Length: 278
Image 1 (cartoon, rainbow, N blue to C red):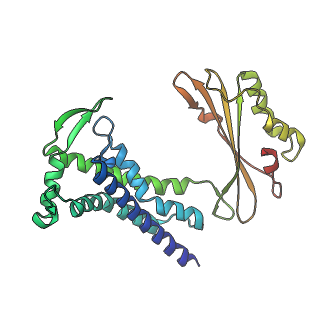
Image 2: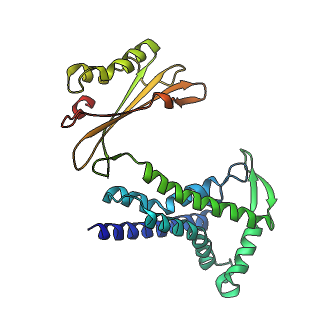
Image 3: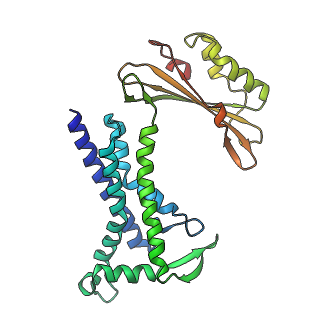
């Protein structure tokens, strides 16, 4: 059964790779814009990072769904897929390019020659108005190399997220999210009382449910407001529940995480608190 699951993960990963290549190549073909070439400050390959993650998304989603823990075999496949994705997108563009006079480019020049022309004739656009800074010339190969690394990093990020995904230590299975709750506070005293007292009561008692339902402030983005996001997860095997709480504060730059207030709490064996979230 385990071997069959790993095979299904491999199939899903391959399908995710093909879908990513098709979507990105088609988008460029019809719009003329290469999504994975989008970068921040020219050298931060944001588009390639996201595209690499997308190429590996089939492995990520299938692993979660089938409860397959990440290992070296999945990592190797993800790296191969991320490494091939950029080349496959280039080749799709080469194979499908037809000039205005009906000439099929693939019938006239080889892939390497096409790639050299394609990379060297790209334009760099900078600033909020996407001002054209001109052709990149041979620097296009360096940019492609940076994007290639971006693809790899994006793929490896998918693997690392799988490794970090919440799981039941006893059953070695991914936890399923079953409930979510958001609460807002405008007064630090109210938040402090809530945060300090919530788990002082029995989680199967009315006090716990009452506090979890308490939200003295509407979810408005006002400076100083505090947001508490509670997520309840359950092991699909032993049914034990685990609750995570993350705290954010609204500042002038928007909602900011407060990592030191994040907490993960295991519910008592045999106790379900899902009703407290309703």
